[in-house]
Image (cartoon, rainbow, N blue to C red; front, side, top):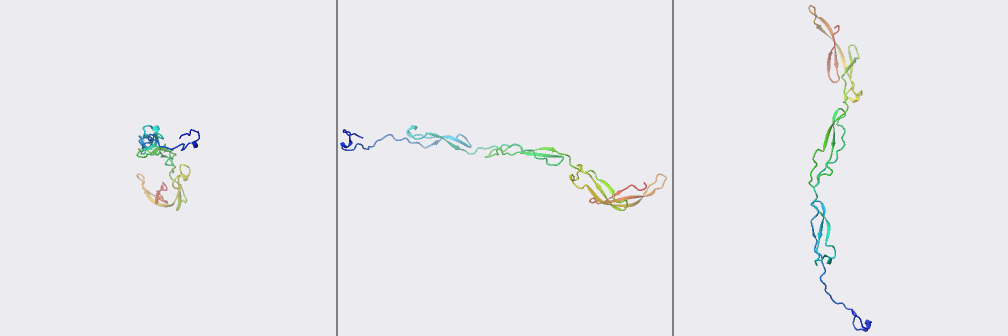
Length: 221
């Protein structure tokens, strides 16, 4: 720019300003980024990357000369860890001696990416004892329905709990009874002759066991 001596640019010939070229040192420019090492050898971490200004002075370039960024490596191995034990399960029998069990899982966390499995047992057992199992008393026979000839007889048994439903099987059975008369010789005492006696033989036909003869004491004995 220039000024007219009169103070008025119109009083002077020509222009009061013109544009001319100028030259300064080259502007600073950043190099490409180059990365430092990741902070971890597996999994996720961070690294610092840097760059240089072409002038040798970072203040001559716009922006930062370094920054921290995320980095990712191959997943880390995860060793398995046991979960807590479950509650004990119910006894595996309904009476007398049995077993109870509890379990745990290799899930806290589970093994991953080549990690080790949990060591030790996944199941634990213990003994349990409940009340004595119900059982039947021995069979005992009722009276025959007749005193001679053919009839029926009942035999019964009792469940130890007092409730027949608690024991397997039936509490009573019926069978046919048939009386027979069998003659036999009873040897006499020293110096005496033997004598004939008549025995009563009862033949019983059971529901399941076939025919079973029962020898009763001889009459007159």
